[in-house]
Amino acid sequence: MSDTEPGDTSIRARRSFIFAPGLRPDMFPKALASGADIVCVELEDGIAPKDKAAARERGLALFAQPQADDGVERIVRINCLREAFGLADVQAVLATDTPPPALMLPKVRTPDEVIWLDDLLTERGHDTRLHVIIETNDGLEAAHDIAHSSDRLDALFFGGVDMAAELRCRNAWEPLLYARSRVVHAAASAGLDVIDVPYLDLDDPDGMVRAAEQARDLGFSGKGAIHPKQIAALNAVFTPDEQAVAHARRILDAFAQADTGLVVVDGKLIEKPVLREMQRVLAIAERVGDRG
Image (tube, rainbow, N blue to C red; front, side, top):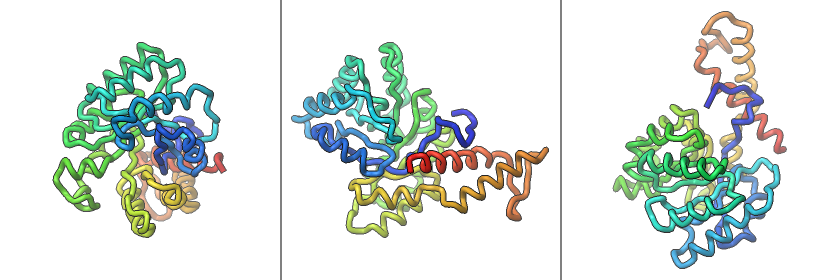
């Protein structure tokens, strides 16, 4: 991703996401109205094998009509490209003239999977964007190369449940800190957003907020939700507050007036590499404000 400006439309808020089952197209409008920045139509883990074909047909049919310009990002999570269900999903996407705006790829192990799908989409003439879940040990090892594998990529997602199982560790913050950090590093190196796994305990909203704050402070752009009631709190954690926005503006103004790569703002020495993140803060605040 290139250097950004506050009005850069290539930046969008990805503070929260929620799944909508492909089997239940009636739930899609409700998910779109939930306040989540991303709604992902589910064809993978949330769908039983016997229902995969029906979910695929119904889920992709949702995009037969033009989608509203409501600021909500629409994604379809297909099945693993190394499985027959995943190949059938890809064939269905290539066969339609109205593909979803983006696909989420689970259990990616190597960059070749992303490159292969990119080539097929290019050949077909689809502009579909890609999001990749890093949730396997092989994927974690190759995260940097995966992040740089395609210009279609917009974000990496961290799949903590599957990753904990692969690493044979407890699904908790500290045991997965190295894995999370590696995914954040890979995403940052390619200018991608990076989104954390949902918090699974609906009865612990305070714990979810703490986990979201930890993810934010580590470098994550957002976090998943398993229920609409989690979304408002997640959006609040990952939205730049007024103080952060004002600070970003002061830094950008200081550099605009300076002839050097160093400035002092609020008593602290600031170097030029910080500029991109400050531009990002303003852009996200602008996107969120535009959505009201």
